[in-house]
Length: 444
Ligand code: ATP
Ligand code: MG
Image (cartoon, rainbow, N blue to C red; front, top):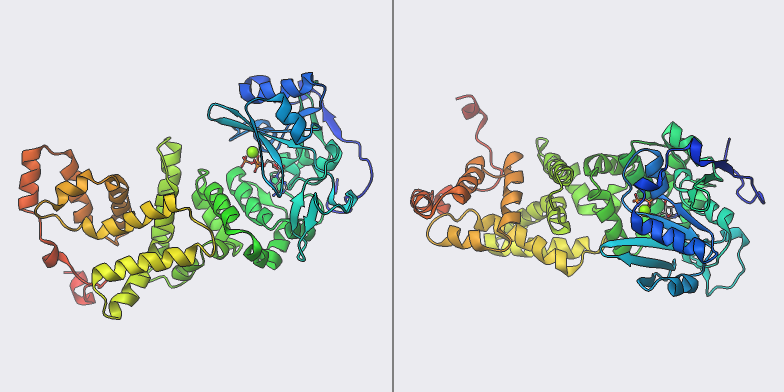
């Protein structure tokens, strides 16, 4: 069935898949989400699991979080749950909290073509972007205004059936990510859907439908108007979701990466001997690997890695202008940070440690005297050392230096003293970065 066309087709009979014919079992839904679903139902409201939860369960994957849709209004939801907070202006939602888990409960939204012209509750920008979306409707309206067909499947807690208004099940089987309705209009309403398309394609291994894909090439400039704080949130989901490498490659393929990290894109296009691109890739591989091993990853480290090439390039420019190494690296860090926050914001609690990671790179070169002992005590030592490892793996920092720190940490006090005594002094080691040996020596 083709669902690309007219979405104002009145009432559509949904496909209803009864419990025995699908694979979603309550055992794989979090107990908090079940509590919310049942409490709404018992209070006489319609109550569905929707979005990524249903999609991922049908694919046999573990959902990241659970979203609930209901005909209860935000105020009615708030009265039902003590542990509830209403959030969002553009899109009002209830967050019901259970310890660390948050269940997002959204009231069915009306379709945009059927809503009243009351602009306190809904508004568009000149480009067609939805500025407010708080007119409520029924489940069918709600289905049509979701982004992708595979994200618009509903699991009904009343009889455990799955309800499909938009042929989402067919696309789920076909591995297709397809915008509901007219792609251009849907991207104009919310340009972040372009980034979401890439994120889901990478995470699910799905193909973006050709129509949904073509519009991206035309409309990527619309991302300029998105508040930088929202783009920061999206960057977190894109790169800290476990599929950073594939996501990065797809973002570059669709020319969307430069909308998020213009200076990094610029640096990548100037690659020297294949050098820059390997660092970012290596860092993202490392991020994915750490997440797969349940190790912590931080936005500060991620941003430090994504912006390292621009920082290095800028440092070199400032050195060439005659600044000292310390001045140049500090100023480069400040400049790149303030230029980056014009594309995606970066809260201070992350930008501060990010700059520390950069600054500590040169301090790691100081291995004589008390410096290395102080370095070990530094609260950001671990991150700075991990960063140095990555740099050495891509050949940008000496492997010998990284190995030295690896060994230094494992030794007892006496052995450490010996290492420090025989460590090369920094002056002797310092060379202009990235100067290569003349070709004649390479094969010696
Ligand atoms: P995941 O949580 O795995 O990242 P998700 O599909 O659940 O993926 P959420 O951001 O949690 O994504 O949103 C929940 C649901 O809300 C989506 O599945 C989709 O139906 C709807 N939705 C979210 N953002 C948008 C948007 N920008 N435009 C239209 N619908 C959206
Ligand atoms: Mg979700």
